[in-house]
Image (tube, rainbow, N blue to C red):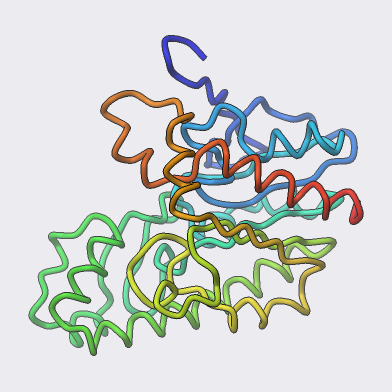
Length: 270
């Protein structure tokens, strides 16, 4: 760190177009691959849970986290899938369903939170909405929820179905030993939190996780209280301009909890 900033040492694996958090690993020895979004990347966190798991287990851990990523970012990167396929085990963070292309709208292939455009179906269903004003998926969904809650529910259900299908494809593509990681401020059993436009992972509930259980070795759940999330912010490293964004993320203390939970499972699995 220098002048209050974190050196993320960005690196790429193979021909991947996504830059991941470094330092880059050689992949010569046994390793565990970690796929996920902002929490896996460890934005504003000096020692993300991936690094802590490596220190705890003694096994090399490869951070393939990508800020604001959805499942699409990884399915579109053969180099990343190859890294995961050759890992002794892969940990996949449960990411929200909003950042994926689907029958209603298209997202950026790498920056999955970026809204590219609405399909003809979307424009017909929401003919009163000007989709050219949106740049991010969450902003677009919030507008639909406010203006047309009943029709918005159709989009939410499409996202749920697309997420389940895409996750099964990702799991079948990677194969091998896989651990799913749920880390959030709510439980997958919390019906209100899994249907509203709250915090990630958006729209994912217990039933959707249960569908994936036969395809994975373990599901690790880390549910954070609001108090723990607030305390976590105090140890984050960010500039004054980044504080608003940082407060929406899970900080170092949550990463410690996550690392402990994952290390126990991985030590038995690998």
